Length: 103
Image (cartoon, rainbow, N blue to C red; front, side):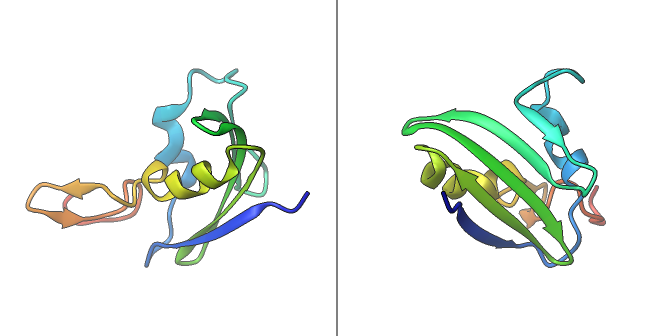
């Protein structure tokens, strides 16, 4: 089965481990894992069914891939999951775990 895929532009390198840490429920959490290659794997339930989401940080983007009945929903929510929609004080948009002057 081929995954659904999406590229999320960041404009700067993103630290997935730091960005997604808030979603992890301890070091043994089976729903969020980080691979040696730096990718993050997340298993989740969506309104459309279960999904597996893989996120890979690239130079100025994040590559998202998803499998399962809820893949389309998971891909659609990926920018929010990695903090793309975060607004800092003063209405400055910024990635959660990039180097921003307001952080």
